[in-house]
Image (cartoon, rainbow, N blue to C red; front, side, top):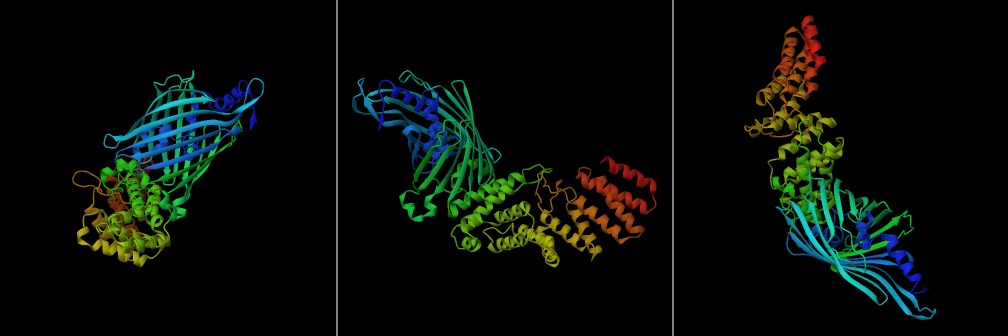
Length: 597
């Protein structure tokens, strides 16, 4: 035990422990909740969920999917400690409640009178009891919440109680599939407790899902005129381990989270335990303290995500909690996120943009291989209800996101073959997978196999007038351009006649966003005319040269909005054709035009 005078030095020690660390009255509440938030430097306002939301943003209670009990202990300097106990419970699919107790204090001080005689021990504590409610509103576009807190401060047998104010908060749905914003205003209406009053605090936060496994956060806090930024990051290494780091202008923080229930499935009966650890590094006060949380959770109260559909992508935030769940539930959530990222980067993206399907691939890869292992195809075939999740549309999105993410390889070929074998409850998109496989064959040099597949697609009558038919005709013509130029020209002429103005329906809406090869102008006729002209030029002779020039001029005349690279190529090749025909003046004019594009 310490030997300290109650009247003198103990007060100094208490002030040193509490106020040197936290600065203002009630600042111990900003120490944080669980080790997860502490490891990210407290940048948690927008990510707060379940009962830990009570210290950051009560709107997070709306995301409570099952009951959750969390116990946190942090051993601080000079035998001081911080403990946080919280419990959250979902009321329904849209709301949840929570209660928490936070305690910062020191105990077992040696109590002495003014003569130095020992008269027992005493302790010092700052304690808060917080209760709150959160709910989805506006058709699940926003989460809102409110909480209230009661405070107690004590020293030996002296204590004071008071009202710590009301907190209100908002968390948005995910914006652009990646961004989320949150705001919380804390300590509204707080009263004096032992001469101190919690300052009104405003917390603002933005979260960014950089990739499936990486989440970045930035917080700013305004309290009593003080401005404090925080940054944090969380990265899921695998299904068992998550690493975190952060900085809060006082210390660098780091930590890990361990899914004990996944390491040892026998622990599931004890509440699906998760263990989190964090520590502070390089704090100027030297408080590099261990912070440990143990979280126990009950069975899910929320249903798995629905199958992908147009409007569901506006509600991704609701289903993020299922991303790391095992089996079909977790697979369905990852399929949903992959689908929405694919749509956002392709169909909804501007034509001039280059799609980045890396995030979509990560979600799809987790849905297939991550949830079902290396033998995922066999596992999916034998899992009841899997065909409702893994249909052919999802298959081709998985294949094309991989083709976009990395160079086409033998691994790509095997993946597509497995996806075709796997099938699904809908085969209307099977032809797109067949086209992807044909293109993969072409890139890898299996040209006979590529020609065979392209020919099958091109000859299917039900596909006439559809983009995939035109693409197959074009690729087949490209492969035949040297061995059978006349057949290639006939195929290209069919492409131009079938889709002269691009891939649009009768309402002017884009029909498709062809991925491989990528046509930024959403037109294939200009590419077909360019290739047709090249074939005529290769055949040689004045008549073929004139036909080639006509094809190049058609590109310039009928497709002025085509990609600049195509327009420039058409002008330059037309100039070459004119020179071959001895029409030097026309060739010069065409070269000037090429230079101005």
